[in-house]
Length: 87
Image (tube, rainbow, N blue to C red; front, top):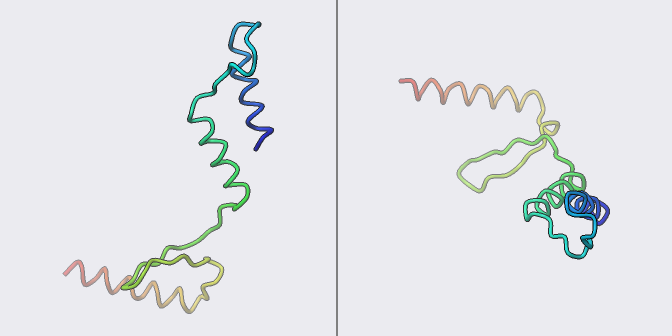
């Protein structure tokens, strides 16, 4: 993250007059947020997950953790809910 921050500072500094010291360069606030987001994405790596909401709290479940039988039951349940809503 430090390397990326230095790269951003150098990029911002390159757009200023040549005698400007890097200590006098202040990057936009959005840059630090973008660096943090990129770092978190790399560290945590986005995973394929489903969010399940029911009567209790919402929870995440990896798609690979579902068996085909569970998926079939889930599809049947959702299909019946849709039929009820249409009536």
